[in-house]
Length: 324
Image (cartoon, rainbow, N blue to C red; front, side):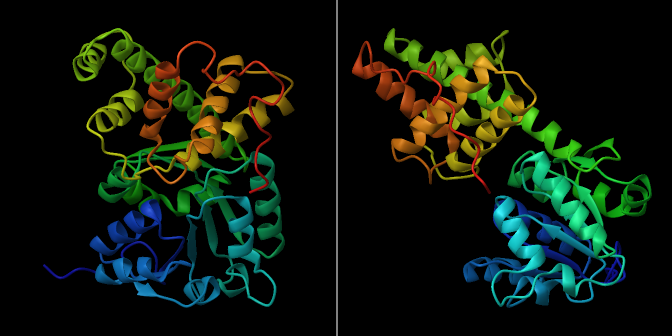
């Protein structure tokens, strides 16, 4: 069976930022025969994307040249701005896109940053969908991930074939850019609370002399179950900390969520405590590991005895959200 060359867009889809999620999306698009142009600051990622038939480009602007859709899948707001509008003498991707093109903002960033970037894109005649992702690289690869999309109804409708290929769980949150980010941060705050609580529970079980694997199996069939706990702690108990989702990412998202809550005039107690645990995990040297490392942190704290647990009651427990 011959694959169509461009089933979703008449021009190549540009993907800038081909880390775990961006690479998985570009591979999935290539599976369907969609032409894809990619860029990443890590040349090793270009090799992986090229193996799936994507075209590696020397810059974000080169990847976006003439494209009707640009997917931005970098880490934070600062990187997103640099991709779109350039940095120093480097030209941004927005200036290279086809007239009337659409930008999908997939990083988890603050709502105010999304609103600002969307407004700037609109000033250039470009549409924007605020489209943060959830589910991890395996689900991005098989198209079963979630996209929380906010943006104009017309843009949402126009990109349905592409969006539905990328995400089986597709939510149109509202027509207001920024609401996708708000939804994702609320979700990730709960994910961080769930993971921190589950890591604490398993570390406690081990401190009491219980088998961690057996305890997790019981929890998986009981009221304490959560998806992120089952996913992360099974790996942690097996000693597998290869980064599917770096500790830095959920630490960043948790801090952004706490900052968003503060701006709304509330102080989420559990969220602040989870944020403090993630900051402690970074300080313990776990930044580059999978966020399953939170169990290691709790094991260390419990092994150290009374007074060693990181306190989350002070005003600095959850650091201000990073600028990016």
